[in-house]
Image (cartoon, rainbow over all chains, first blue to last red; front, side, top):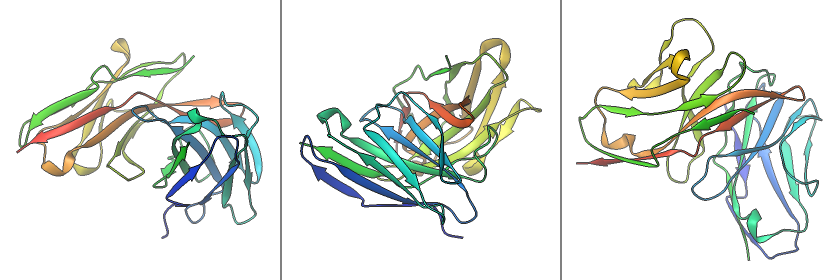
Length: 114
Length: 115
C-alpha cells in the first residue's frame, strides 16, 4: 500500500510569485486536506477536498486555492506569495473525510519565500 | 471555537524514564482526540486516537493516553522512553467545518531524550 506522497520536497520562491504543490493520496482515499505548518507551530487547516469539490475551508485568503483530480491526487496553489507563506505544507488523505476518519499525512513540502 | 493547548514547549527526559505530555482541549461537543508524532523531516504519524468508550487508549510504539472529560485533558504517557522517541508531539481535536473534518492542533511539545 502506497502512502501519501508530496512533491517537491523543497521550494524557494520570491515574493509575488505563484507556486503549485502536489500530493498523491493513499490508495483508496477520496478525501484530501491541506495544512500549513509555520516554524515552531502546529499545523493549521487550509481546506479539504472530497470527490473533487472543496467542502471546507479554514481562515486562509482566496489566493490559496486547490484542485483534486479524478484519481484523487491534489494540488495546492498559492498566488502572490508573501514572506509569511514560508512554511511546511502538509497534505493528508482520509477515506471519506468524516470526523472519525484518520488523516494520513505526507512528508510535506518546505516552501521558502524570499 | 475549538482549541488545543500543550503547556510544555520542550521536555527533556532520560532514556528509560517515564513520560507524560500534557494536552488540554476546548470543544463544545464530544471531542475526537488525536496524538501525532513528527520526526525531523517527516510528516505526522498517528500514535493513537479517542472517539468514545474506554477512556484509556493504547497506541503504537508503547504509548497510551487517558481522556478526562472533567479536566478537558488528553495526556499522552509512556512508561519507559527510548532514544528513538525524540521528536515533536502534537495533540489535536477533530472538528467539523462546512461538512469537512479539520484537525485543530496544539503548538506541539518537543521531546529530547538524554542518554
